[in-house]
Image (cartoon, one colour):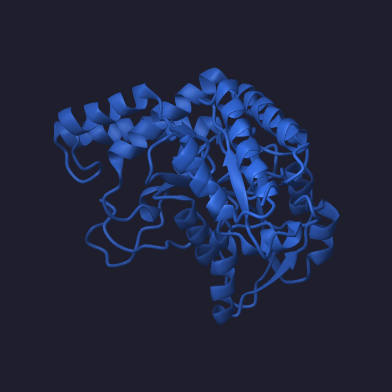
Length: 382
């Protein structure tokens, strides 16, 4: 199988990551922070090491402000539901994933309002439109670092400056850019950063995180055991334990830490450039195919995603044919971001998303191009 569905989760994973997870589960996997014996303490030490490794990737000065979660969705819900209050207003964009738009819709029941800023046909959102949407009661700006539909990179630096100048916290959804874009939380003025462990960071599924700046007053999403203040019925608010109630996914977190350290050695910029070259190879080949419609911006303005349709063939049918006939994994549909598809003109049919990763090759892309050509040729002859 040629795997080109890295926007959903990266594959394959680094071999060393699997080894450190296996070592944990086979040799010392106690419950960190719950006991004083050797196995528990060893696991706690390795989780702390992983926290520092992931924090370094985002230039987070205090690793304790990094909360481990199960995925980006949990991180975003913790950020939104733990920070916002009745009467607050949020500015967000039409290019957001449902992990932002659905919680915001639910928070209307709490008396939290929001404004959705439109995008152009390539998925671009301007910092000026964000600024114009800010009102007197705006308490938060929420924006994806890059679209999961088109890969369009958002102007985070400009938006971050507006957030700092207007004294409004900025929450960034890093689902499609963590690991392939430089996300320096200090330089970009990011108050909260939600990210997955299993996509660009090349960690295992079931891992993610939320960075919370010192200027943020956050309430937990989960209440329960933290290994601290056990006599009290009140949830501790210490970082990170107060926000990681229950037993954490220690083997997964340790694996994530390993993958983050590998990313630092390779360099996020090197990965970004390589993935962009692969996408350029695909885009340049299919944009001249008569039956193929290509969406989104040029490769220089997006992450490793190409979005397309073949006229006369449904997007899910294209994805199924690529898998069954050619052994190529992509994703067809609406990608949990219906409004984004409305912005770019694919509301009625959805689209096929091809997303590359650092383990893909130019040979993989050539085979994908050939497969699209064959499917489109058959569609054109109907």
